[in-house]
Image (cartoon, rainbow, N blue to C red; front, side, top):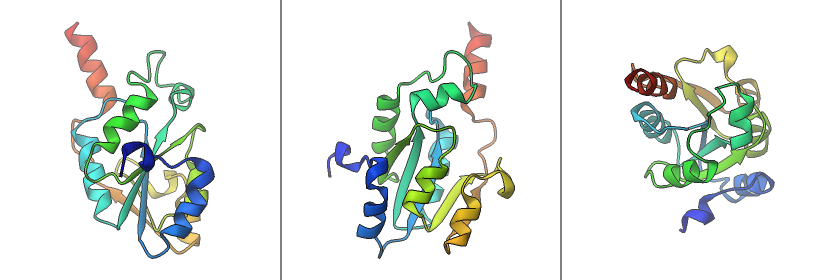
Length: 159
């Protein structure tokens, strides 16, 4: 399947869910601005929870609205999508323009919602919805020392 065919628009999420009703759909999300080992580990482990891994990616506008700094995102939305789709564990990508993926989660109705261990259960957007619809929430232990902010800070120190 071509990479562009693996990008699911918001308007197609409910149909995608219906078309794959026999599959366990896993969802995770993030900016994925500078892809690093922590991201790859999260995606590898998330995939283990189901048949299809759908990754929600913050749009460029959404990243800017999160207050991560004037320079963010460093990598454009299109390039972030391309890179994620090149990873063997990522089956599909969807982009969301809001600050949180709640509307995306509600449209997709994933069986499993995965976030990094830095989030508490109470801070995971969509957790209540997923559990109310019969799904579950999983937290993946972070790989120590890997974060986009740490990489950016190191680059600033080295320059």
